[in-house]
Length: 242
Image (cartoon, rainbow, N blue to C red; front, side, top):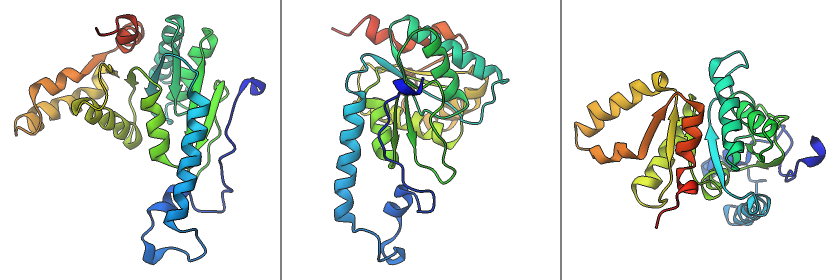
């Protein structure tokens, strides 16, 4: 399997602080031995080029998010495997964060069903390698570059239960859709029970205080069915807008 995997050699040794942490550090606290911000622009550009080159030919794809902490015994893990299979059977590649947990489940299901399984991992203090079910893999230093790849090369999102990272990716997608930066882009929440409280809060608080419009909620679909999740996420691919 490893001989199929394309990875960009973009990880730095663990002993160094992460690239994101160094970038976001206040100049007054920065180690003078670090490169200047203007020089870092070249590193950003190089990482964008690596990502574009690796993902440009993956075809129609759906990005699936979810927690790295979900164990194989968790029912959501099994659902993730099924979602990966359902997407592959529709001729769609899957993109995940490339790590363990739910990401591994979706990559596994996709690969076992004969689809193209893609992973975009990120440099973290507790470094994690790409899971064994990634065929096209790239490792990023910077979150913002990685997050662009998730959107640019996908035609829709499926979001499983997760923590801060998953919520960040969900709300970024919703913001892009709400503001028209991405169009005809299905956003599917998997696991109705998990998302009930958040959706209720949006309706009871954000909409009640006129901070969101009721029509903004139309950007979101919710399901507990892997086949329906795949169908919703690929609806634009199956029936492109006029």
